[in-house]
Structures are given as structure tokens and as C-alpha cells.
Image (cartoon, rainbow, N blue to C red):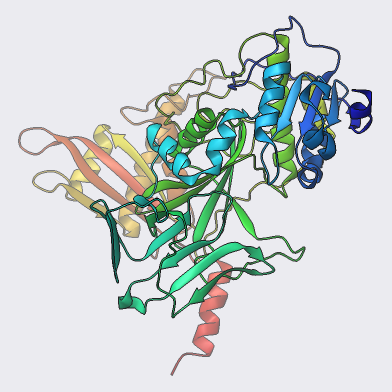
Length: 550
């Protein structure tokens, strides 16, 4: 055991305590300590090439003082007995090529650490057929597809130049051909003769290339088991969704490799991606997938097509590569999960039941301003104060989004004021200009008409002020003989805005209620103003006048 431990790299650090009322979940065994130990030991059991990519996340998780990270060296993982591996409170483990899943499962059963990602379901993630089957079981939409094993002696395959049919289920071209093994990333798309035929091969990025078109290759592969699914038009973008537990998701859009196969990169050489908001339904899909596969840190792909969202792949342990905000949020969630599990307060997944999605206003993805992510699927609870805020205050701010409202500047905005009028003097004025007695509405635009209304408004305001006791003021909610005082003063300001003329002001009067005989009892007065030429608009007009088009 000593020799095994000597080959383990150990990094000690700490993180601020993050208690929470936020339920989470995991299907893996949970320690039953009655309190959180002074230092939680986090074991990292992954292949060597994956360990380096975990550094940013581990640095965030161990940034305060109560967590110790123990890295299981690859030689120990492959060669030593699991009884010689160190005992840890929390285990970070996920599959990659050469990773001994069965052996790690044996260690989990022996030591019973809290696992962020359940070991058992990881084997299911290695088979695309099993993934699609599980997604359908939990009510998540997947593309229409069939499965056929060319080496299994199966029957019922019908292949024509413009479609494929298995056991009576037809998939028209263009269709996608995926190997059953999720570790095989060589995916083909076959096109119908009506658009020229041929096929496109998708593969893991090689330099700036992610796919290639073969105009003369239309034959499907017959060397194993494949999924054949309908090709979904996504307007050139795929969605990559990253979850941390059932209540946190971060989504990015990238250029689809089915377009031209060219990878768009930023000046630093990284693939260009854009953060996006998920719909309420997509958030519920993220929750269901996290729970069903038992993977707290997880990634999956969404295709938005035909007004719906389809999941076409589930990856297991995946995380955003270039967002410091994501690492901060993810580390906060994982710390809270670990502390709740080790303290024995309750299962981190308590309350994360499979139920209908929360259909309220979709909150932003990527966490809240308190560094603790907002609950995406139910009402957001207040974030912890204390050390969470202190830690956030020390981090440089990151711009998440910019919202702008822009309009042209050649005219001022048009504005409108509505008010109901029951004042006898104003109603008689409106009747004099044709409102009532068979006429439902009238517009007052001329200087004489507008001046007449202004005079009546000022008369009503003067009468109202004269009734006040010395030193008191009228409330904007009070009325002046059937007219709201606040709106009456606004109307006064509008009508006083410079000399009457042009089209910069008008009044529209509509009948609301009239007595028998047509006498007006209540009217709706709508004042409209604005749309006046600004200095920029005037300069623009002068430039056009000087150089008119021929």
C-alpha cells in the first residue's frame, strides 16, 4: 500500500464552506458522517491525459481551505489493487479510452465515496443505442431513427437510392449514419439523387476541418451496428449543453460541421462558440438527462429543428473549456453537493424528482451574480451571503451579455397620453367639434382647436388650485371635476410646447358613453405628440436637398 501511495500526486488546497438549501442528487453511495470534516478529501481517478484539463475546475473547488485533492496516478489505476488505493470522501471519475470502469466500480463498492458521476451508467454512455433507448424512456425527444446490425444476421433491411427501411420503418435521405459505439466519431450523412447524391463524413476536428464531402460515395457501411436517423435542418448551428447537477446548465452554440466542414476559430485558436439561453422545456430535458444517467457533470447535444428540440448525443463528463464564470459556478455547485453528502444532511438529489418542467420566465444560464448559480427549474432561492460574496468580490467581473435598444435619431420619439374625461366643459367642447350625436370620434389638429382645449385645461387647473387650503397640494391621483389632475397637468405641458403648427401635436376624442339623443357623458381623450425633426434629421434633409438623386 505504501508503494501505491507513493505514486499518488497530492495537491492540498481549500474552499469556503457553501451550505445550501438547494437539493441536488446522485445515484452513488453517500457517506453518513454527522458533520463535515475539517478537510474533505477529493479523489481524482482519471487517465493522465484528462487530468490536466481538470486543473481549472479543481483550482476553483480548492480555493479556500477545506478540501484536499488526491490525484490517482495512471499506473496505480491500471496496476494496483483497489484496496491499495487511497480512501477519499468524494470521487471524481469518468471514462476515457483505456479507463478500467469495472475496476473503479469495485473501488466505489469497497470504499463508498460520494461520486459526482455514477460509475455504473458510464457503460451505457458507450453505446448510442442504449443512450437513445434511455432518452426515449424518460420522454426526451430524439431524431426519428432505426438500428441495424450488419454483422448480426438481421433481416428486414431495405435499401433504395433515396431511402432506407428497417422492419417497415422508413428513413428518407438525407439521413445520418452513426456507429453504435459512442467512441467512434466517424459519422456519415447520405444525400438523395435529387440533390446530386454523395455523402459527407463528419469526424473529430483535424486542424480547421471537421467534415469532408464525397460526391461519388453513396454506399452505406456494412461492417457493424449502426443507427440511421433522419437529418434535421438546424440552420447551421448545434447546441452544446453542459450540466452540473440537475439544476444548473450552461449552453453554447457552435457552427454545425454539416455546413462546409470549416472550423471557425478566434484569434487565440479556439473554436468560436456563443452562449445561448435554453427554453424552459430544454432546461427540463437537461434535468431529466442528469438524473436518468446519474451524471452530475455532463454534456449533451441539442438539435433545434421544425420548432422542436431533439437530443442527439449524451457525452458524460464534459465541461466548458474557456469560461471562467462557468468554472466558478460549477465549482460552487460541486462544493455544495460534496458538503451536503459528507455531512449526511440529506441526499444531494432530494427533491430532484422527475416531474413537469417549470414553465416560468427562463432565467439566464451560467449562474447568478452571487457566484452561486440560480435554480433553473424552480423559484430561485437567495444565495448565501458570507464567504460566497467575499470570494466573488475578489474576482474580476466578466461581461456576460450586452443589451441595447437603438432607434434612429432623425426624429424625436412619438408619445401618447390617454385619459377618460367626464368634465362637462370639456365634453361640451368636444361636442362642438363633432363628437357625439352620431359621430364616434374626432381629431383636433388646428391651432384654434388646440388653443381652445388648452384654455379649458388651464381653467380647470386654476379652479382646482383655488379650492385648496393654503400650503396644501393636489395629489396626482385626485380629480378636477371628472378629470385626473396628474394627466391634466401632463396635457397642459404637452399643449404648451411651443406655438401650435405643423403636425407635432394632435388630440383624438372618442365617445365612451352617450345618453339618449347623443349627448356625450364620457369621452376618451388621446393626446399624441413627438416625431419632430431633430438637428441630425435636419442636417440629413439638407444634405439630401443639396445632392438630390437624378
